[in-house]
Length: 186
Image (cartoon, rainbow, N blue to C red; front, side):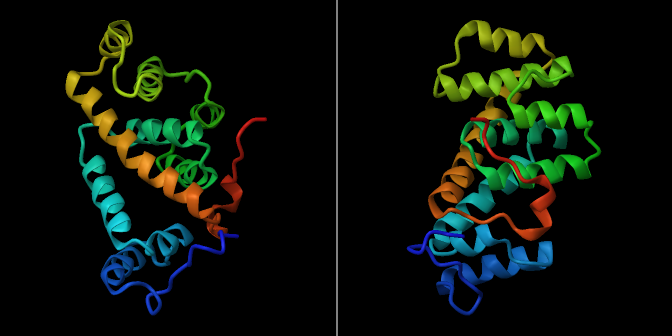
């Protein structure tokens, strides 16, 4: 249940500036996610997140690598909705259950290259971008390029918007995501 101060908008109740964005999301997904309905209160936030997300999706990181970044941010920021949503995405991409389980637990990944990516993402978060040389060197030694380091920063920024907005509004878990429900470890 969302916080009562935030309205889960419909296309009829949303601010006019949010309506075209909501319509695009509905057309693309076939439904309007609860988080989008809540973000619509601020058309700029909704459009900003979706625009940043589209740009992140166009980076040189492959789909599974992008999801490693997203799930690392989502678990770190304890966004139950983001973890469920991106678990579903990784599942659709055919990711191994061991990879998904490790990401959801914030544990080391079985693939060394993806583990280097996960660790670098954690370093970006922990050091607010001022990643120590050793962490950057380990990332590059893991098979990544300098541009990928910047792509990670884009992903961290994009999903900080999403995780913070979802937590602030107490965005609900949409029924199709119920099987991917997650809560932070105690």
